[in-house]
Length: 204
Length: 204
DNA sequence: GGTGGCGGATGACAGATGTCATACCCCGCA
DNA sequence: TGCGGGGTATGACATCTGTCATCCGCCACC
Image (cartoon, rainbow over all chains, first blue to last red):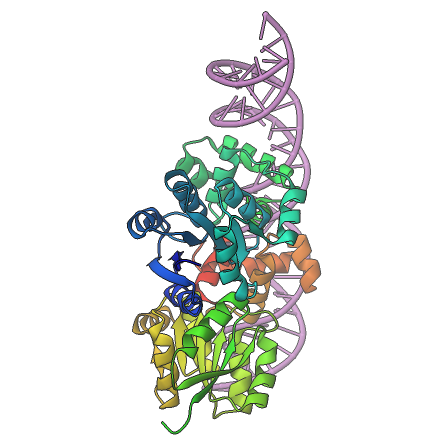
């Protein structure tokens, strides 16, 4: 290699972020040149630090790592994108790929895969857990419409129909209709199970 | 110091666990002598490795870090216990302290606090985030009875009253009574909010 | 120019959920 | 000995939820 790989690390939990930085710091050919704790700080940091690879956690304040990936992909198409997540949800994998990610890693994979993935994406390879890829393909696309997702998201904290109607500027009946169709599409029996099911698939 | 501090690391996500190990490995006076990924492997590892400090994540398969802490405290009272968690829930802090923990850290604290906490507990100090401690004291004790908690836990996935009754060997009416009292104690308006509220406080 | 999907709405109905009063048993504590 | 709290149960009642049929407007696609 001619020079070190310049990595940006985006992860909201400082302890985990700095620990990952320590881990990557052990590699001779990798240098963590920037760290951010929020999704909406990713683009600026990429612009400021001549980054080769951006390592993005999905669950972050500001915006998700997937949204951040999409923005980086749009503005800096040469930057390679590694998406890292706690939850191996097939829907996440799908959205990450659509956002232009080059690698998708779950945090309970062995640590060695992290540096390996960084090197592979830089070499033009894609890195995806085959099991997860199979699951993402098997499960098919998200059947929920945008409105159904909105209502489900809003219902996730236990709000009543009246509150949902007010918050979303809909009639109570319409709220119930959306929830009802979502419940049917997800093949569950009530809104709580629907929220759970949609979350698990990464469809929320 | 006469010798290095021998640390056990318990955390289920390999990547995070090994990253934390790398982080601690940078300290001259600290040595990670064992790593486990499950709560129920903690006690055995402590027995096998002459551990000075056990660093325990709360959310783990097998058993929680808090339960593991209680067991270690019972069988190896000289081992210092640092509880590490993603969620700064006051109820968690309370239970961790009751289980005999010497330190309570949240993962979004700066990484430097980790090694610092390890050294402090070994020196006999206790390490607790003052904000969290205040919150834990302000909130008071868990008002839910054991049965109410059981029912709430079981209701968390969206099960219906009939299913809860069957699963817990109760009548449907009793299930509804427990949920009703829980809802009142938590000052919320339905089971979903009750689950959410109890979770947030660390009471579930 | 018709068809179908999505967003939005209404009304009716059945079933689930939340509340309340009441009752019984058991246990610990005064 | 009595009282209170927890665990369990029942029945009645009001409200909330989920389903279904039906309707309207808009837009895309054949």
